[in-house]
Image 1 (cartoon, rainbow over the protein chains, first blue to last red):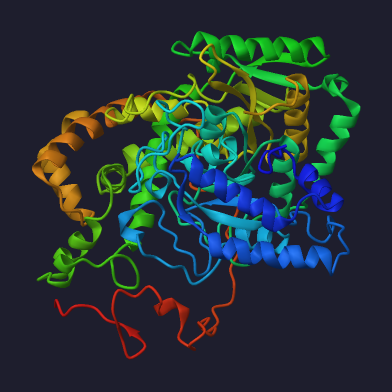
Image 2: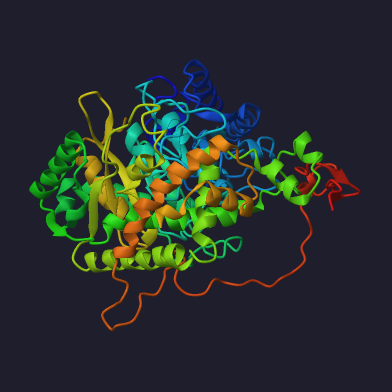
Length: 496
Length: 105
């Protein structure tokens, strides 16, 4: 087995235990792959920092732990991760894929990253993304687009495109993404890996550079549902540094997944699976539709109860989201005033007025970011606030009510992740509305704050991956991961 | 509402957002933001009166109830290896342990 070819954390730990692999050898192998296959997935490679971490762990494994991986104390011992460049790491450049933060060295580490590193994970680098996480194709990065891992003419999806492409291409073992309207699940689906967004408030956003604060969540991007569950449970929990984190019990979700794996596909027996009639719209690619229909049939034949449900406000999802998200963005991005951090150009230094100074500083925003700031400022402006922001927030409530009614009848809801497989580079970049419509299936669960996951289930004729989207009720991650694990068993447990 | 988007509106909102826009950018945003707002227009069709005749309560956040508060206490800055506050690490310009800004007022 090539050294970077591991699909599960347990396989890596077995290799450590058997003495055939050390953390330092493992880290080296990922850097070799990274350099041999230019996907532009990394904005910053943390080679020195990662090797120092790996050296320490290699030393500890031999001396402190007598060659036995400390799975309980450090469940991510020696696991090399990619961190989306929207999450801060103390002393490591964090750009958010923007020119405005080109040289930003954060003074603190995001809680989620800190928890993973405390559990033994190694940070290989900071992953490319759409600027400020605004995009669905990863073409909006100031550091250039990310390339799809298997089809070089395609996008990897966005905004966590680097995180997805690198995991699929074995340039890191797993990664962190962030999801505001689908930014974990869409690229996971396009690249053929598992991507999960937890319930809003599960994982601290401390150290996550804000886009739309009522929607933003961090989540894992992995090669298996079991590892997504493990990363998610390690990162979850109340954090005094983020007042929106929930004080809710965090179960051993990875153990729940293993229990399902032991039980096998008979676990589908009695599971009530909701299929929203509104999600099978015109415009959905026939191959995507066939793949979803086929997996639903397989679930049924294993004993799942398939229930047709209605989420009547789905058609308003994209409109609602693009008012809410841009309004929050225009407010969040007002902090880029060039005073305490950020790039200060010569033109800004010579500004003649405060307004001119701000304008020169903010000239470093990319075109999509500017579009969203303008749209958000417009939607919040006097005279339009009620018609746009308030109205969209009311429709958002109706969408959440739709889910609450549906979950009276079903345990989980399934749908496609995206109407299509990975589209071509440049195909939608000139038409922002078309790009936004790629998120139609992922947005509703974001607006409602629900946990959801993308699991790869098939490939189209061109070999491009197709993902299944599963949504569970609020705080029901146990159920979500179980259902995800069952789907994985049904398709043979293979990613990418 | 879409007709409300023209180059003057984009220029004005650009001013409010402290964004300097070129003529080409303004022209592009008139088209793309116009398209997006046309799509958003469909929200006006949604019935916002609930079963009891009351207007639907807006959902402004992802969590229910009030946000937790914490005491407003002074804490020490975390410092780097030279004893300097880390928060100054990214200051475009520094003067006497403070942020330096151009004289523009």
